[in-house]
Amino acid sequence: MPNLSGQNGYLSGHRVHVNMADDPVVTNPRLYSVIFENDRVRVLHYRDEPGDRTLPHRHPDSVMVCLSSFVRRLEHGDEHVDVTLQAGDVRWLDAQEHSGRNVGVTPTETIFVELKEPAAESHEPRLGPS
Image (tube, rainbow, N blue to C red; front, side):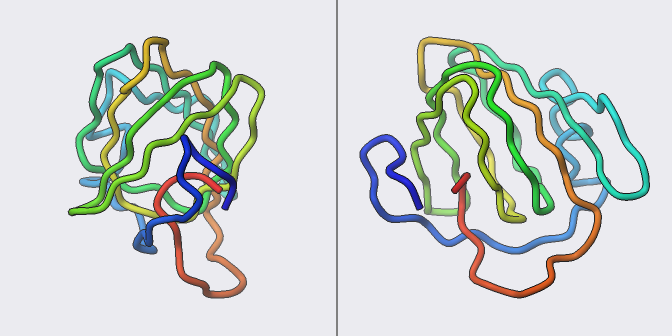
């Protein structure tokens, strides 16, 4: 995993399937919106301000496209990882459950392309992007 905010390791996440109660659009409707969906993918837009937090939610395997530069803290249970990404960065996001907080001084704006098909191979998922 690349160096994220000075951390060289990664924290283990939890492979999950999203249901309505854990859907980020349901748990955090002020921050997430669906901008496209078909039978293979769902595309979400996410935007927050410094200090904003998300409630716990789940993502399937996804591609994250950063529209802004930002610093976030992702948490799951007792684990957390600080993530610093730049506008234009594109990252893979293993299926996972987490909550997040904008710990930087700039808004976070990203696009998530969520895959609806299961992963071809199993591996230990990670918390945060890789």
